[in-house]
Image (cartoon, rainbow, N blue to C red; front, side):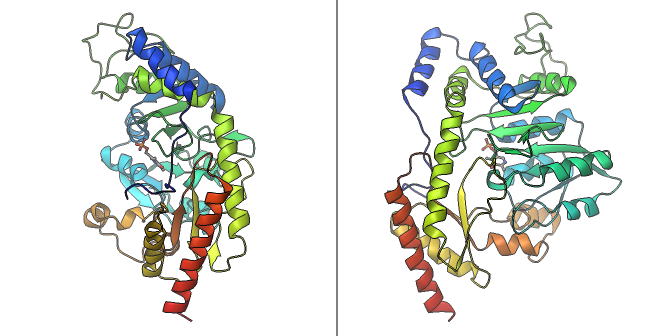
Length: 391
Ligand SMILES: *Cc1c(COP(=O)(O)O)cnc(C)c1O
């Protein structure tokens, strides 16, 4: 990928973040301390959930939720093939079977009707993903889960700050998980957060992230002081903790969340204005008014091939503009093809969308000049493909 003059993404780090990290370093308390608790309560407040449990990544958060909910071998979990691979990998970690369903071509999220049709007696959960931050259909998934008495787990790693029909992303199901990798709406460098209203699930996740130690008291990280000794392990746990340094970044970024979400929306609006007239381009759906933008992903019109799309991405990169193919379908990743025998054609809408997507540079503070330059370059590259290959 490399670094480009206009990068694909760039975290927004101010003196607030710098000072917060320095304060932690000066405090001498680098893990299992008060800053993580502060970060957790900020995220819980924002999502309107009883609990938030910080962890080392979005992926580890998803893993813990599935373990804590007792999902394992013999169980099926319905999910989308159009996502970052981590959402589905978590299902594999616990030995359960991912059951993919095709997506809705507008929202790019799993099609609710197909989810309902895929439910079997072995289905334990729906693992929903807000693709690119878009929370559309989350209410439908929640209704389907309730009706069929299965769990809804939200992989909200791309959707911090989104809400739909008044409900916050992360709070539609039994648990939601956020990720804080540097390209997300907020970053902690690496990190993740589980949100839930389920007391038992929260306790289980707090124990799981900390080597299976007993939980000292609700709302506090288990130090071993009250709930049992430091070297007493009640279950098979992990080291999925988040350090105080990462949490300090999280607190600073949460205090800027509204500003960051607004800045991203502003860039999305600039892109939409600039690209609206390009007929060979499908722009992202903006049906959800309260969408927190994760990335700005356009796609070439139906009829363009994967090779043409790849050449456009290469062309952007040659012009020193970061671009990427978000996301290749999960079921066509070698590990999934080999283990489950998926093949091309299994999920035609996801595949058709996926082979035409282009993620454009997108970060808070991106200027109109930069957006215009990306738009102009993209327009020229698309015109060239249209002339070369088709018409
Ligand atoms: C980023 C992301 C994750 C994983 O987050 P990490 O913190 O990198 O582990 C999971 N699911 C989706 C949909 C993501 O975009």
